[in-house]
Length: 366
Image (cartoon, rainbow, N blue to C red; front, top):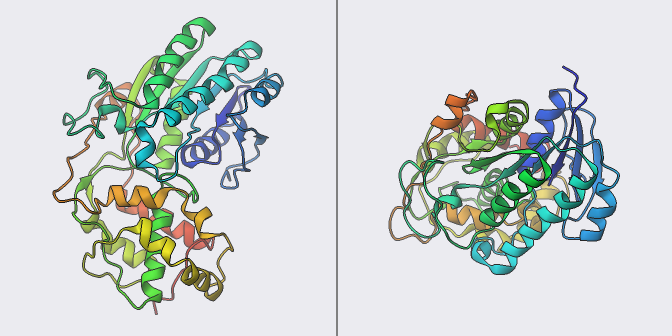
């Protein structure tokens, strides 16, 4: 289906930005992918790339002056400090993320007639960094006030939507899984690199966390399709929605399936800080790259900040089982969006994708 509508994807080289761009392209939209680096994983069809640093207000003014055909925005850009978790409550990180969205939308609304803007949050909105949250976390629950850029962006978008006459939707996805490497929070590249290093050291692929837990995740393709749904369904206007695959999972239960996909022997759990283990083996990783003819991408560019995210998700160093972060997805399902993914299949799909693109090795299982 062809459409005369144009969507601007801010942060298009990232996990959600890539997925959203692919979903909109498949639906026949004109997609403008906005990011500092070229988003090489947008593969659904043709798109326009605009190189832009959202921290540069003058560049944003100059660029948006040429984008008067934009009708929709999916804002997925994020600024994170090195080390990831420690920066979530940092005043500089919060201010920077608030300034970035203003740098884009303030001048854009002067030139384009926006109809809808989508922004992303996450389960930190429910206060998981402050302590146990209500189970399940529901969108209708009162805001948990704590230092977080979500609230800065949310308050801004609500006020801006009134003054500029566009609608908006807020999504809160849970542990997004997709193809992107070098981003702040995506586990498949970290898991694949860890497995390869263990194999080269003659060690089994064991769960590196200190304690197992029950989690929820969401495939990036589902998030991308949800962004498209929000842009095309009036009932999504002014709403906030949780997003998951629609099921829970356990790391230990899923670990053998990932080991089989990666072609490595599964082992017993062995608590290992991946934020330390992987960078310490940079020389070994270069040997792996040469041995299996992988893409020559520096290890730091593959990891981004996701190895720190892995330690959090795997509860490395935890003394007790982490508090659950289950969210209700009843609201969005009742609104009409019912996509679901099998979580182990999702992880294994993206691990195979990384193998296919020669980011991680594909071992001969014979």
